Length: 369
Image 1 (cartoon, helix red, strand yellow):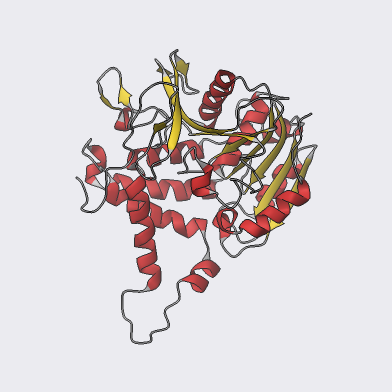
Image 2 (tube, one colour):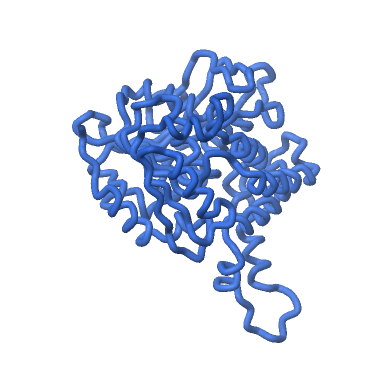
């Protein structure tokens, strides 16, 4: 079912070569596609015959420039200038004029990498709910393939928030010594039951939309809207909504600002993202546990030698300060800093000046070693 006024999310123009190609129609940006034409085995044991990875690059990737790898969060794409323009871009902290900057889209996404809207070679139709569950480790394994394809021998700095920080932590464990410095924002070493409960509620909202089980254009869009509204409550907090969505008109009995804001956020995501991709990305979010199969979180973190900055937000109800601090406390070369913001988990996207000051204090600039 197609909802009036909403374009079909996740439409892709994919030329399967090394030319710059527009990957997603909202927004229209120039993005590369790397096609890995060999089997890719997931952590769950599923084997893709091949995978595609969407990515963006700034710089010539020569070693005379430091290399920064930016990992995007939940529904981000491979162009951080779209979703983190206060931190990444010309003249910003991650300066795309001074550094080699790479960002890859994660498996399972709507933005060009292999995901539920990709074609299943066995059926010649989109995977949809036949897509396998992928984990954070699978995402990082795909990034590692891209790194080798690009000829990058070391990463001077990796930076990410939330699901993006999950990737950085996982990569520093999978490839010891590859990453020289790491910045992890608003993330834990293992997804908490609290986070999983929010994610399950959002999946239940999508599953309650009967179109979610079809392969029609825009399938599951209404359920996705409801899921996003649920998610916004966890990304912000009581103080955020009271400060930004107040109603001063005493005569009102409906049509409150908070109500319209939630609907707006739901509609905005449905315009640019697939319900099926969101369902699987939330599954991947749940899978985050750096200690799984490795002897536990404490053992694994104690072995991470990368210089690391862990940043929490004082009003974040999704990843409380103590949870982020515990990551830093268990790593031998990590520092923990608190970002003061009323915007909760989303503070890293909004408090650009405060965040830049923290980043510059910890690492004023990058240089090659």
